[in-house]
Length: 352
Image (cartoon, rainbow, N blue to C red; front, side, top):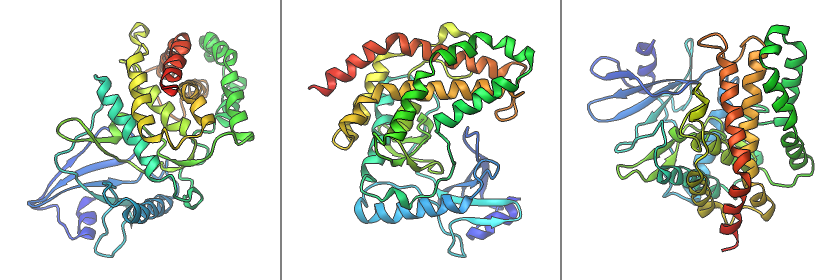
């Protein structure tokens, strides 16, 4: 397949090193190493992203804006092929070629609070630099991606339609979700009352979407397919969901799931260093809520999928999505237990 793709960029497979690259779950990715340069080739997953040209146009618009307003920022965008286009439509799908950023690396696991700080700072910087960009110019690349109202409605429908056996196995989890439906009520209030503005939001702030230099300082954010209008709670919440615990969402030993308060403070410090003068007072008041928002939403998405016989996320073993739900529910429980202390951290910082 790549024998037909690389010539679109003036390259051949012969004489170049081509390797599958990275741990991304959505798009298929290769690293291309030529005698002079390195590149990242990516195939867009059309089962997830139905309109690849919307992504291409979003990134192009942001590139033009940042090149004029903040030319010092490293914005990693697709390179043009010999046709001049940055998105290649082929019989095998849609492809893009990115420059490989030399002397950089990404992390899959956060072991130090300083890494959490750097990640949060980079995502905050990204939104800050784009604060004056007209967010209405961006396409919605994943409709309703973080629409908690819709996700909750899908969850309740899944409960109603689930088999008796699966419903019985998840009875306690369903009860927990329903008990904390106030998280959905708060989200509805935010949206319906337009309490906080829509901004240019990344929407996928896992640490492996940050490039670090050799001193482990953040350089920039990458993987921009989900950049679209949204609320800051999406970016902050996803960082909390994926940075706070030393165990990831696949961990089945629930005793290993924790909330590291020093990592929470690192997220706050890094993000607010960039966005502290940008966020409104109302937005700042929802900083801790952001963690509840995203953890809760992921829990109900995993559980809804389990109740619907694992049609979206799939499963590597029987009960996989049930275990994932238990993981996220446990993380939310730990988070709620510490919420007063987390609020105190943000309160102390905000009054300094």
